[in-house]
Length: 218
Image (cartoon, rainbow, N blue to C red; front, side, top):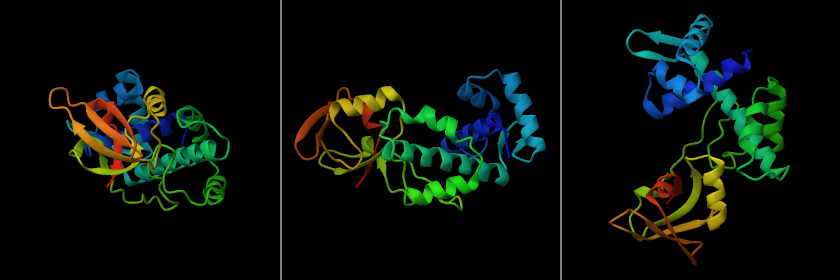
């Protein structure tokens, strides 16, 4: 059983490894967590003694297999709780992250397995992120960034890479929900603004930043 602080580190390291490759710099972890370098170094030393992370001089550190499986377990709990909060308690998708951050530290594996079964084994959370199964296996995603599509292409809105409340509220404002069909009508050469057709009828213009934060399954 790991402390809440250790679990926060495990999840953050996993995120950095997924985004930037196998090795993680201490400075990058400190920046992500908003913690002083000295505190991060001390925690990594403790986690190293527990065989959760491995350090390589001048390269950085990475999760061990034990640490990786622990991180995936935390992610699984977080995303299952988000599904529960949205589907069963009626929270909006922009409200659940902070609550799930608290609930993910519950250590009862039996509770999580029963929660998974109660929710009928969901494959994705309310933001479209894949939920690993009890063995830590993620479903394979074929989604691509909307910004990678050319005019005339279309697909189903499957997820976001920006989980901030401000961004999710913006999507609500323009009337975009997971599962909606999006067609790229035009890409402005000057500023890379995207003109989109939502659900086959509503036309909206979004920035490249927005297009680069939406995941689409063609």
